[in-house]
Every structure is written in structure tokens, then in C-alpha cells.
Image (cartoon, rainbow, N blue to C red; front, side, top):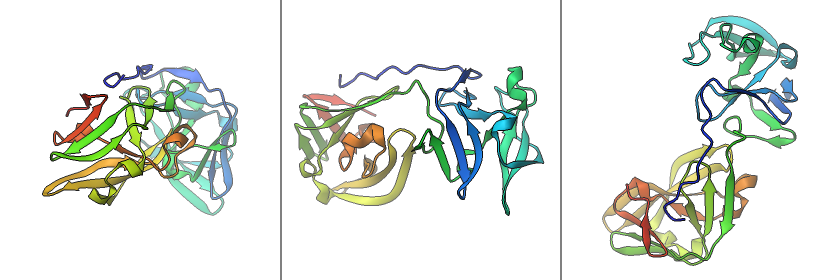
Length: 253
């Protein structure tokens, strides 16, 4: 398992599918869009976007000129979204020449322009969720040993193995099994639609300094609850960081 990547379903750009849950977008507590469900459109293979039919957009849209051209959907038209006294500049787009005719009158919204997105009654983060991505976090008895600069910086026989579609297994370790005295928090954060917001640490062993090679989720989302408060090492970032699982080194750069 240590070297195996869980296969992801690769969705081709241009794919259009009906969603399966109700999705709403809000700005400052005001409902902007509500679809049950929206269409899922893959402009690129990484994750879909939500597209709303004209009757599903509650806010006023004001034409704001041409937008960027999509390799998949063609030229776009930008719209400002009017929410009360607030104008969200260029926060909506349409693709009047989309290859799927049904999309030409539909609207997609810029994710970051809206403060709250809901799938049913659950807040969703970062971007629309891909229905083909699965996240499993499982307690394990594997022997995980982490070495940097010849020093054992972590060793555990009680990791939590997190497997996400398209990613290698990640081994999250209890902090009591980690030399936390060698870790310094950084300002780096990353965002995952399935696990939440991760914080990072720099690992220092003597004169060896490895920035942002350790991360963790203090308050993960539902799929990542089992790794709350644990830490994970990123061996792909440096040849000086060795992660061994049951005696096998994984994640060489």
C-alpha cells in the first residue's frame, strides 16, 4: 500500500453532468443562487464548476463586458452581481458559444466572490466538490519512521492513513510520536475542498532546514476528522527527508 496511488476517475474537460444535491451561494447573508441541483461542468479535469439556470440566480446581473476565453467553453461574458448596495465586480460569467447549447444561457459564479456556499445544509469550501473524489482516513498499526539529517524526527505504530483519489497515501502521526521541538510553524496555509485548511511547519535538524515539509489539520472537514490534530510529513519535497513505512522508504523526490 505504501507506494500505491488510489486511482481517480479522470473526467474530460467539457463534460457536463447533472448534480445530485441542492447548492446555494450567499453574499453577506443574501441568497444569490439556488439550484436543486445545479449542472456540473468540467472546464478542466481537476474539479467541476456549478452552472445555474436563469431562474436559479436570485441577484441582479449587470453586463460587464467580455471575459476570458476558455479553451473548453469558448469566449465568455462577464457580469457584475448586485447584492443590495454591494456590487461584486465580474463575479458571474456566461459562455454564449459553449459547445453544449443548454449552457449558453446559464451562469457560473466566481467562487471567491461569495462568502458562503452550501451543499444541502453543509458549508463547502475552496471549490465545487467532485463527485468522483473519495477520501478515506483509517487508523493503522503500520510502523512509520521519519528521518532527517540522520536524526529520527518521528516514529509511530499508530498512524492514521488518509487515502484520497489520485493521491498517494498520507500517514498522519500523533504529535506525541513526533519531535515537535524540531518544528517551527510558518505562515503557509493550503486549502482542500474535502479536508479543509492545513497549517505548515518548517523542520530544523542541526543546520538542516526543510521549509513547509510538515502539515496538519487542527479542525478538518468531515472527511478528514480522523486526522484532526495529527501531523504529516511531505517526503516528495526534499531528498533529505526520509519517510519509511514498514521498512520501505516512500515518496522520494
